[in-house]
Length: 108
Image: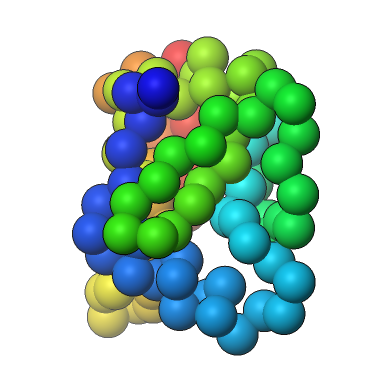
């Protein structure tokens, strides 16, 4: 069990994306070093699960997060936001002490 959650909007968007991608069953969210705040989120489509992956599910949408990334994301919500300037996945991470304007970079 994971304490990372998916919003209803994120689940709907993931399902819509994967429905158009033949052979892809998961959205992978990972944390990498870099970005303007020290760490950044990376989003990929995957067809297989790795042994150390945690699966987060809601309404048929499945997200993979590896163990190392999970340490940075505990307590987070994966959301999908549509705004005037664009639409994107957003990670609402209570562990982040700062974030940049792009929404994909953060620091702890």
